[in-house]
Image (tube, rainbow, N blue to C red; front, top):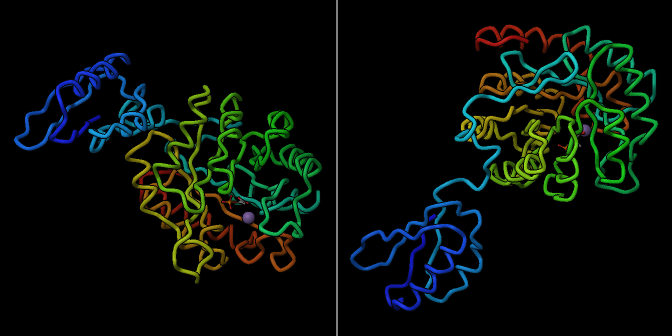
Length: 337
Ligand code: PEP
Ligand code: MN
C-alpha cells in the first residue's frame, strides 16, 4: 500500500499516522519526492482501515500494490486448482461440460435430457429447481420436488448434479441433494449467502454478476474461501452492456484475465450470455479457444415449450454435434473432453 500525503502535512500529523499504522503491525517507509510526501506501507495492510485513513485531511490518496483478494490470488497459489465432483473434475486438462435444461420440468424431461447429454459426453448435469425470475408471475421452478427429480436423473446416469441455491434457508436441503451448489449472477454479491456456502464442503459454481467487474467476482469468491471452502468454480455468463442484440455480452477476455489473476477454474456459459440458441455452438468453441476449463450449456428436448429460457436452449441433437466440435478443438488446444 502506498499513502500520498498533502505536501503541507506537519511532522505531528506524520507522527499520528505512523502511530496508527504501527498499531496494526505495519511500517511506514518514506519514499523520497521533491514536491510530495509519499510513504510505502509494509506488512499485512489488510488490517488497516482504508476509509479511516482517507478521512484524514492530510491524506491525499491511497494506492494498492496488491490485489485485495488473497485466497483466490494466483500469486500465493501458482498451480491451477482442480476440483473433483463425483467422477468429474473441473480445472484440470479435461474440459468440464455441464449441460441440461434451464429448469427441471418433470421426471421424464430431466431424465431424458440427462441420458442424451450423458451419451454425447457431458460430464455434469445442470437443472434449476429454484429459479430467479425477473417477474414474480413467471415459473419459479419445481423447488424441492425439482431437486428430487435431479437426484433421480443422477441415479439414472451417474452424472453429478448442479443446481442454483437462492436462499440460506434451503442450504441444508442443497447440501444433502446436489453435488455442486450454483450461486447465480443475481446473488453474486449476496454476502450472507456466500458466507454460508463457504462453511459447506460442496464445490460452488459462482456466476459473474450482471454488472460485476472481474475484481468483484474474485472478491465474491474470496467471501466463500475465507470461510474455509476453497472449492470455487467461476463462471463467465455475459455481462450487461449497451448492446441489446444479445441478452448479455460474453466477456471472453475475462477468462484470460481470471486465469492470470487466479488459480480457480473458470467455465463459460454461452447460453445466458447470448440468449439465442444459434450462437451457443460458436461461443462454446470460442470459450475453449481462450482457455476456459469448461462450458455450461442449456439443452432442452422441446425448446419451443420450455418453461424457462427456451430461446437460448439447444436440442440434444445439436448438443451432440457441439460435443464433436469441442472434442476436435480440445485436441488442438492440448486438452481433452
Ligand atoms: C441459470 O444458470 O439458470 C441462471 C439463472 O443463470 P444466471 O444466474 O447466470 O442468470
Ligand atoms: Mn436459464
